Image (cartoon, rainbow, N blue to C red; front, side, top):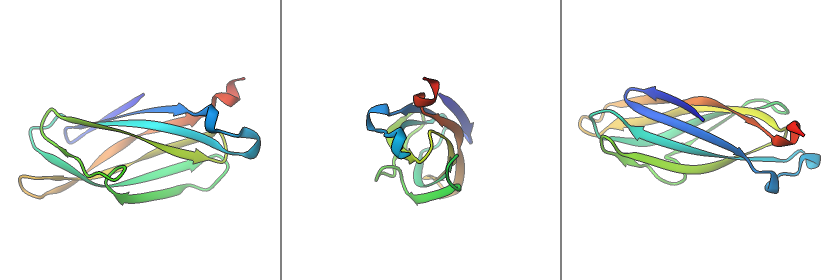
Length: 128
């Protein structure tokens, strides 16, 4: 698990290789990751957008952007947290991801960025 705090917002990411959904001989490796966002600030915030940078040893780096996370734009009061699970497919069993959440302080509308810490995706296939 990796953790990073930016502007009072803590982001923790835990990644899991999904061997039952992967086909290494067909260059298809599936990973899931659980993200927990905790508001450690004294302000109510909303997650508006996200941008991921995905690096795969077999491909060029990809950028994925969009509104919210898994169809939601959660509002977090001070002390609240929001968790979600998503996934990533790689052509190799080696990769990494990192990114940014674009957030807003609801009391004054000011926008700010929260860093999503880099995490590694390594298929257990390589540990055999």
